Length: 455
Image 1 (tube, rainbow, N blue to C red):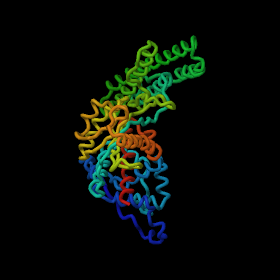
Image 2: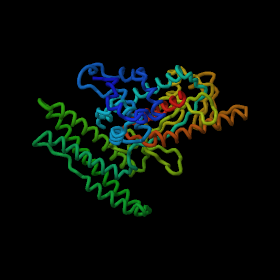
Image 3: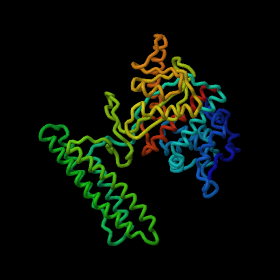
């Protein structure tokens, strides 16, 4: 059952505390005033399952949940640390609307709610915050700067042999569970992770001498690891087919779900084996799998010296501001993203659609040289002065310098978000998980911006 608001926060014990303890710090007090608006939680109510809204156990108050997530993004705490610190802090308890006698929700409750609401609800909350600034603070977006960044997935640096070890281990584990559910006569998937791991260690020993015969030896060992994966995949397919054939009567749905899960893992493992075959054949791999746990993550090359290749997702961050002065701070639109390594122009139509949805028509737009003028100009609202560094610039040198300085601020804003709002690495798996993570970061940043402007 959905609950938007909780009970009474203050109790008799609060009146025994000093005034300094009962009062929130200045930054939290401003955020508390903004989040007191019940209209901000309408997207959660609209997205909640209508059939389960009045049934089952009541959820934690959504007003408290949103405040918990705001604290989490501002501090960078994990879920367990978040619950522990809120439980131990009088100020954070009052900000998150938990009384002194109330237990803070378990970390698994918060984590599951994040997944259930998903990225679309967070994007709608972000739009409501921007609309609130336009309505109450008379914010007018006269300029926009836009740039893309890579948000790394929560995966280790991938290699074909390491993926082979993971594939054999995961298939054996899931196969063992399914075989146990089927009972006698079910043949589990053989655990080949030790054999694959032995080849991975041999590759590591020759990694410093990858020339001539040593390089050929690395490829040979990688090919052997790929063959082990292919054998495990065949056994997993047979076991899944056997489970579907025996799915009768009681427990049939559980067996079908386990067989479907095993088939899905077999698909990923088969892709790993196919990648190894393509590497040995010298073929180009266009859609490389870099993690079994996060199959949507992709290798992305941005030309950085420190990190030539990053593994994750590309997000286009667009900030609308009231002016182009130094230190201008505005609001982030819901970030645009797509699986793979899309260029700037491919993500721009999604950003332009957000402008139309919010009714924002900026006078000036500052972009970097990655945008193509022939496709960028038609995508933006007509009459907008578009500055593209090194490609499309105004005749006035003064305006050119002003917009160039304004555009560079987008890179500083991305750095600010990565250092202060957890945008360096997405801790949620999958593309939807990364969109959810980045969406909460954008929402928290916008709330902080609105709090500063309303001070």
